[in-house]
Length: 246
Image (cartoon, rainbow, N blue to C red; front, side):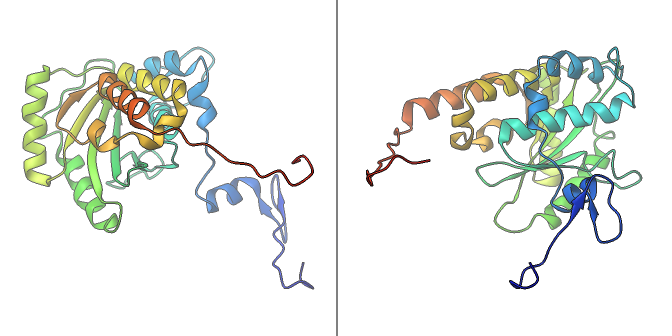
């Protein structure tokens, strides 16, 4: 490699002198893409249990942290983009749990709330999220602006009308919409994306997430239907060269 002017990179399971460990290698590249976890039959039931701040049978760890990871897994497959899991991995830092980019070039800040009782969305309780949004607006300046703040929980204490009002106040303060999503709806949205993987890049994710108040899978279903009806099928032309391709 050196003779050809290249830099050899040696990777091993644990790493040693002159070698990079596999976990460090993945972390350097931004982390692994665990999209397969969202396709597991256990994903939905596991995420629902974790959203109640409880551990499913045979699972160990902190349920709130595992819930954040489950939400990140669902979003990563749904959007087909790598996400950054910050909250539980950045203890003491005032940041959102998850930051992700959509195919239509907006950034979402996602906060996952695991709780046994319905989560109460109040103005006072949203102050840390508002601070996180202000920080991310500075961080995300460029071609992919901050599009929305997304709050994921098992259930919300307030009615849909009250949530819309509170989220509207949040948007008036931060200029960023606050979207509330039940974990059951997020699971259903992940299943819709799994059933229509080719439509993900054509979906207007702004229309799905950039709105105040409670949303569910119906918004994504309408977008996928529009993509299916309006997208022109692409034909790949092959030129025969006298031999079959490998």
